[in-house]
Length: 98
Figure 1 (tube, rainbow, N blue to C red):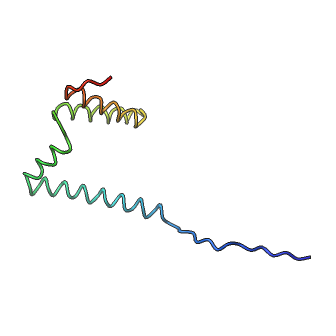
Figure 2 (figure 1 turned 135 degrees about the horizontal axis):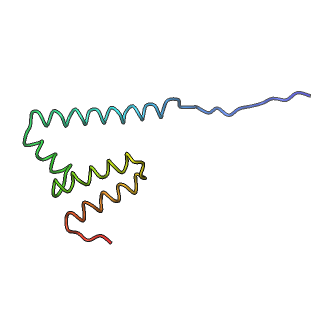
Figure 3 (figure 1 turned 90 degrees about the vertical axis):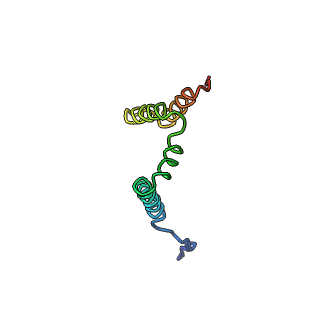
């Protein structure tokens, strides 16, 4: 008595994760190049980007970013560190957070 094994035709897409990670990396590289070119050749644009990336009081935002980096480097959970970062920004803006 014989038997026969039949497999469904399934297409496997190989390298999807690799392509996605490559696109993300290239996007990051192009964004950094964009920021450098704006900073070098367009002072007004650099001021606009600085205001967009560092909202509110720059000293408070810079201190909050340093604290965020310190917490992440010490192994604090990323969501907890970002929550604390946002609370620091809101406190610096004078907005009460419970």
